[in-house]
Length: 139
Image 1 (tube, one colour):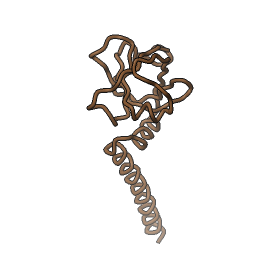
Image 2: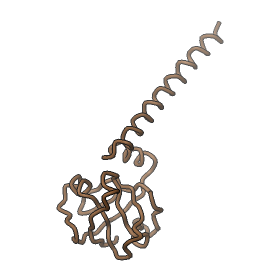
Image 3: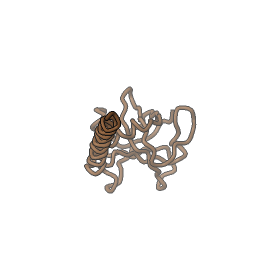
């Protein structure tokens, strides 16, 4: 588990529910490299949050760039230049969906919610079609 120094995230990455970490330190519990853009459960000080892990080409030191919103949602007093032990665990497609559902950025959040409505309407259409086909074949 890497010990990383907290940095402020760039302005363009604020409200994206992401963290920037150099690929050298972007490793999971098994020591496997985590690909850039992968949604992971990030643990620090006994708390966890779903974040998209992105690369940080500007820093080759063990740092993690987080915005104030993310640090605030954790409920921790993670200040800039503070060191903490971080753990990363890849999540399944359901974890990725939850990340989008709870995202601070409305573009991710709305897309996830429209996707769920589409799946529900598709299943309802499938069920109604099957009922119609069954009753037509029964005659």
